[in-house]
Image 1 (cartoon, helix red, strand yellow):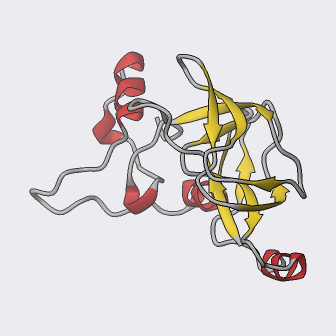
Image 2 (cartoon, helix red, strand yellow):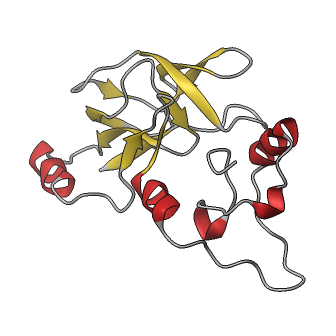
Length: 162
């Protein structure tokens, strides 16, 4: 099974909005083929696939906001049987994605982390992890980023935390 993830389509891209799928389940895809159209903060961009295979499942509906790196579809590798994909799909992934109030999606693990106790602060002299978008969001709203508890990977502060 191959995971097709939303690639970063620009240096400052954190998420995109899926406008359209150019494929459907069962379609064969080739490296370099345009499979989706995603709206970034700057433009609608054709998204190419970099693997070869057959589309098993489309996991994101058009209109949904998708964070960079999120699995948008699954593919069967050449020669892989559909039954094997269903068996693998029966085991839930470690980070299932859930919708948020804003219509965006984020990992269920991050949702659970928001309710979990605060992550440990970095040791003296270590740099605190804050996404550039979260830092900008905090500055625009006058929020002291040092007071925000991070729920991202390894306690990183995300836009949703601000």
